[in-house]
Length: 272
Image 1 (cartoon, one colour):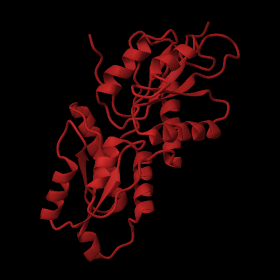
Image 2 (image 1 turned 180 degrees about the horizontal axis):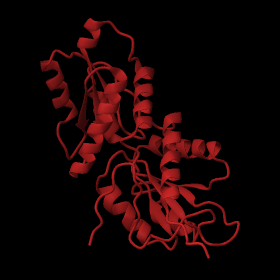
Image 3 (image 1 turned 45 degrees about the vertical axis):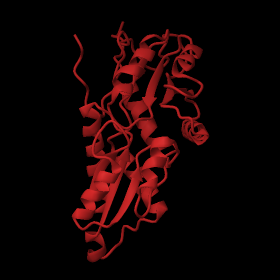
């Protein structure tokens, strides 16, 4: 029987991955904490690898005693199975650098984790979460968005939240929640839109907003790193488009939050 989908802020456990991941994880005294494995999608854009490496390095800098590794689902090395193999039997928490509960989070990553010899747990994706909204807001501000505006400007303003897209309804629900969190910060409508596999497209969302009198529209890039989808969405912006989230400090804190929450949720052995 398949377990019900957890809530967006709950950890996931791959099949057979119920062994405790407490301090030491492997059961050997002094073995250290479970490794944090950042799971990136992968991209042919060479800037993507540099971006996720920068995020990895900032996570390491914030938590120096924590082993932090990087693995990709496809297109870039190291691939996730190779990263997990390099850990041997050392336990790990996998943190997807993805923003909703789509196929990669529900199927691909848990299946790769289940094939590893190490005991692993898979954290929830990075969205939705207030820290994600913080990072999105900061990137918009960097691109030229002004949070202080008069009423006339505010009534003409809006944001399209551009995400990769998925056929999984849970992924769309997560993106809608992220859009609501961002709208709460900005005080203007935020409409989710997708680069593929889901509707509306960015272009359709822009048309809908224009029909509502919203002509001062920014595109918020809900992507970790540069790539084809991020570039396509940004090119459709009628005004400004924010950069991918990359190694923004809020992203670093969010990655560590997902790791800590998942690790804390691991069952602990009964007292002897």
